[in-house]
Amino acid sequence: MMSIENKVVIITGASSGIGEATAYKLAEKGAKLVLGARREDRLQAIADKIIAAGGEAVYRATDVVKREDNVALVELAKTAFGRVDVIFLNAGLMPNSSFSALEQDNWDRMIDVNIKGVTNGIAAVLPEFTAQKSGQIIATSSVAGQKVYPGVGVYCGTKWAVKAMMEALRMESAMEGTNIRTATIYPAAIQSELVDSITNEASRAGSRALYDAHEIPATRVADIVAFAIDAPEDTTINEFTMGPTTQAW
Ligand SMILES: NC(=O)c1ccc[n+]([C@@H]2O[C@H](COP(=O)([O-])OP(=O)(O)OC[C@H]3O[C@@H](n4cnc5c(N)ncnc54)[C@H](OP(=O)(O)O)[C@@H]3O)[C@@H](O)[C@H]2O)c1
Image (cartoon, rainbow, N blue to C red; front, side):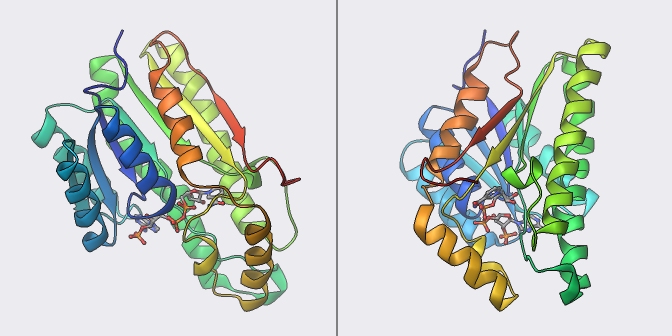
């Protein structure tokens, strides 16, 4: 049985919020981190901080929408640390608005990053995991992947897609005997840069008020990721719904 210590963990969307908090948490517990996101300066600062604290981390500027960037991140893990044990598919965007606003560019961005970011990540790591007959794929869905909220339609659609894909992956792993563990996390309001990146003003103001009233730190999600990784290899803890105690979701 192998716990978090010495596991090689890839995190996408590692440059802020949940991904950044998870990187620090897992590094503290002795994991070797491979960080991906588009903002390379942020990744470098995070890796420097981990290394200064005695941990291990490498990074690569990554756009999860590009298949080759996902493959390159897996290659970096193998070059730097010799293997991959876990991938946390966490990159995501939430530029919400109602359908009547016709923000098709934002719809396309969410579909690309939130869905293809996950399928591209799965494809990049699956050959390794299948060959070694072990591995863990963790994804960040959302409470918007369990319910539907008006004004959040496309985001909900992408996060429901994550739920569906991860469940099929879990079943296929069991049926194919590959020992690949899966976990999907469904957070409610978590402190990060997600809300401030909403471009539709009314949508941003609404979310800002909700988050100001309820949000909890991103380390709460990092704790869940650590828990999922730390579970015995014969145990898949499939889904985690979590959020502020005060939020009705
Ligand atoms: N905060 C919440 O309340 C909440 C609730 C439920 C679910 N979630 C989900 O949690 C995940 C993390 O979000 P967060 O809340 O931590 O927000 P965040 O601080 O905005 O972080 C989003 C991360 O995704 C990365 N990203 C965006 N587009 C990318 C791309 N094309 N390629 C690679 N990385 C990309 C960003 O990095 P770059 O900009 O540097 O690329 C950043 O590291 C998302 O999937 C989000 O949907 C968040």
